[in-house]
Image 1 (cartoon, rainbow, N blue to C red):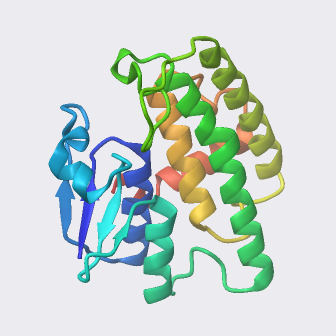
Image 2: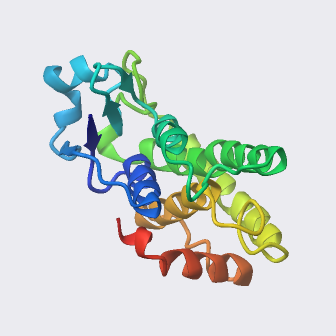
Length: 211
C-alpha cells in the first residue's frame, strides 16, 4: 500500500500523528501542494477530489479521507485504541470528531480558503466546478473559531482529554485544527484559555506531535 502525503496540510498530519501513536510505518509518497501537484492529471486519476491524504491499498482500493484512513488502520491494529473500545467511548469520540470537523476545522477552512489568493475559484475543496471566494466568510470563520475555542476551553476545564480520560483521535483532530488555525493567522486559541492551553501543551509534548 501507499499513503499519499503532504508536508504542511492538516488532514495528512492527522494521519501521521495517528500512525505514530500506533507505531506503524507505511510507504509514503509526498505530494507538493504548493506547486499544485495535487491538481495535475496523474494525481487526479488517483483521487478525483484533488485532496490529501490518500491511501491506495494493494488491490488498488482508494481511501481518500483522513478519518477513513485512520479507521482502516484502527481495525487492523486496535491497540492502542484511538477510537474507543466501549459503546460509550466510541459514541463520545465520534460525537466530538463531528463537532471538531464541523465547528472548528470548518472555521479554519472558511477563513483560509476565502482569504488566500491561492484558492481563487477553489474556495471549497473537493470534486467541484470553480467556486468563487466569498470575503464575508472570512469573518464568519473567525467568529466560529473563537466560539468553539471557548466551548473547548470550558469542556477541558473538567476533562483531561477531549473525549474523556484517555487520549484519542478526538485529541488528534482538535490539536491539528488548533495548530493549523494558528499557522493561518487565526487568533491563538491558547491565549486567555487556561484549560485549552494546558491540554495543547500536553498533546504537543507527545512524540507523535512531531510527525
